[in-house]
Structures are given as structure tokens and as C-alpha cells.
Length: 255
Ligand code: F6P
Image (cartoon, rainbow, N blue to C red):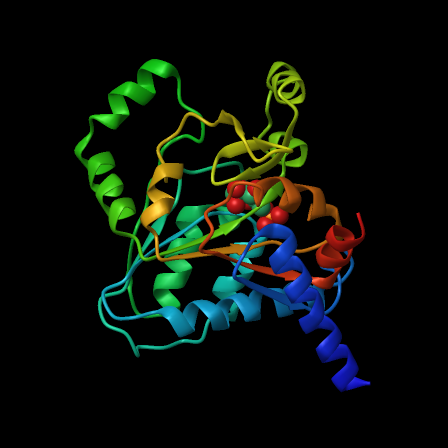
């Protein structure tokens, strides 16, 4: 039965690769919505993948969220690589410090004996604050790091769920609904066709910068995220590697 389970999952990986037009998909057993054990498996699979791609002096950007936070926990403590740099993919967000990209970047750095750069600015900026910030040297520095990143590790969320988590106003929610936002990743909201319908006004990784990023590791599991995954991968960078679970995979395959 173990062998069957294994080969079954590998078949599903192939189906998902075709369905989402990706070259590499990893599926761990179980459904993250229902099982903490699956969440841990998902995180350790991602941690293993990231570790296998690291080289000295690489720059890695990470997003926030509970999934990516767990990856940091699962990384080995290692000083195998020199001068690794970790950066938050976006400015701060929300209330829970443990789930902020800044905190997660520092956790990665601690585990892997690297350094980290944080970006402590509000999650959403006014138009004028945004324009002013962009001219700040520390923001320029961040932008340079994004230009040079080798790895981006990011979560994917359901658009409405993310808007709620961000304490978006009723007006914002209405806006996202009107534009039929389905998924969210690194501050961008996407519709069912994978088109960008909204972007949070903050300093962070730009979609265009992903084109030249060698490794993009998208980590998201749970049946409830199937629609979001379907939406995001319509137009996601083709070098993305998806690390997910059977809960999301089964839902994607059968719907
Ligand atoms: O807020 C950061 C973020 O990575 C979002 O871009 C993404 O939609 C979400 O977190 C995923 O969160 P979680 O892993 O907790 O479901």
C-alpha cells in the first residue's frame, strides 16, 4: 500500500504539472486544512527543496503568512553556505509579528547562518507616502536586492480571505469583488484568468522582477486554496515550483 500511495501521488504531480503548466510540482500527503501534520510535511518538503538550491552569497526573498513561517521552523541549522542574504518580499503587515515577512526573513537567516534586511513600513501606503518612500535610499537598496534575488519563497492565498486578514475596508472588499479577485500572492490580487486586478500600495517585490528570478518556490496547501492556486498559476512565472498537498491537488484535479 505504501508503494501505491507513493506512485499515486507521483501521478497526481504529473497531472498537476500539465494542468498548471509547470515543470515541477511536489505533493505531500494529507490536507493542510485539517491536519497540522500535513502542514509540517508541506513545510519540510519546501525547506528541503530550498536547501537543495542554496549556494553561498545567494539572495533569498520571503513573504509572510503561516505557511512560509513554518518553513523557517523546518529548515536545518546549518553554516554550510557563506554570506547568504534574506530579505522580506514586502513591507510589514497585520498584527501577528510571527507571520510577517520581516520576522520570517530573520528566522531563515538565523537557521542558515546568513544576514537579513528588513522593511519596516506600513502594509498599505497613501499615494504620496508611497512616492516619497520610493526615493528613500533604503528602499532603493531593497529594490536592488530584489533585482538580484536567486530565490523567492512565497505563499498564495484566497483573495477574500487575505483582504479580511488585512482588515480591508468594506469599500476595498467591494472593489475586489467587483474585479473578481480570486487569489493573492506577494501583494498582488489576481482574477480567475490570472490577471492582476489590484496591487497593495507598498514597497515590495515587483511582478516584473520574477521573470529573471531563477527559483520561485510557491508553497500553498489545503483544499480551500484550490481555486486560488488555479487562478494564480494561469499566468504565473513558468519556472515556479509548486509545493502543495493532496487536499489542494485532489480539489484541483477533480474540479
Ligand atoms: O500575507 C503574506 C502572504 O504570503 C500572502 O501573500 C498570501 O496570500 C498569504 O500570506 C498566505 O498565507 P497562509 O500561508 O497563512 O495561508
